[in-house]
Image (cartoon, rainbow, N blue to C red; front, side):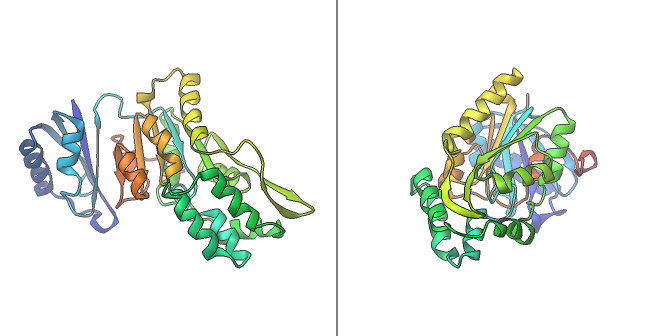
Length: 297
């Protein structure tokens, strides 16, 4: 048995209605799926609708049907995940840290264009990272703390997502192609169990323009998901991975529930689920958790 969870985005918050449930039921039936029991997780905000049939067909029938709402389709069994592996930049925080560092050096537009291309999968991630970091050579290391204080903002829903999952026994790991100088603090603030990211090398209080090896990239993200699951004795079906860029695709494809979060097109196409309208709290509704059960963190 499969379950479709329909979650209102910010523009539709509190407005989902019984008519939306009926529309989804009709769409599933028209697609050859057999709709079953529905229930409100939280009235106006999110509901579940069970059905029998093919996951891909059910998802195709429902995505985009209710304007301003996200749809996550998954097996009923195991919907509460025991391991989360998440990206950081533009996923757990609202910015791309390397672009903001570049702004202090007066080259944000140049660096941001490369970041965008890399996240779209148009450039090799490691080569693009090396090229961008090289442009930051001799930037005063004190800028890192200024950037963190002035510009790093936690993504809406991140803290309750991590706190609630951990309260239900899940392990949460932040794996970023960004930098330890940001990721370690972000992980601590949000409440992750572990953080893994790249090390910006320094020389005489300034950025050296290089990144320590090995680089944390797409392969490392997938390897971390698999290794963490194995260490916990979990099948991959019990895991969730979330990210927005091309370097997140391998872990998203490997996870039991791989989620593209306000993602680049290639990443969105590869994921089994997308969050396009809501924030990270949508992933609590996807696990069946009503707001009254959330831990705010």
